[in-house]
Length: 92
Image (cartoon, rainbow, N blue to C red; front, side):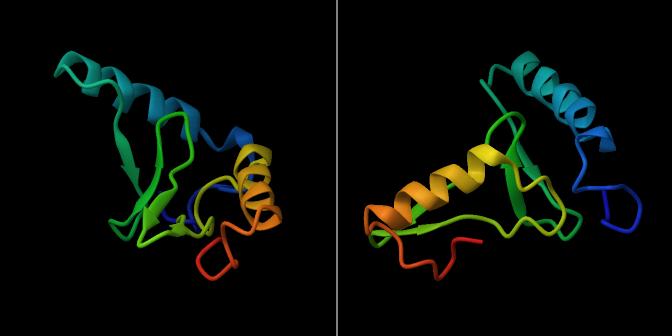
């Protein structure tokens, strides 16, 4: 949902319910999971996991401006930076 319509920075926003419905729909079609798009149509996250892309050796992840910036996501980013894997350019 658009960030103006739901408290996207809170777990109580109903995003887990939306993701669960989409995961079940994907499983009925033979997939393991579904990628969730934000209100702009850009990849935001999977139904129960954050998304990280490696492109030409650089790690990229969506900016959490309309989905929960949770502890798992922040921990992965912190570990990548500490190991010198990411310079922080596209790491939220």
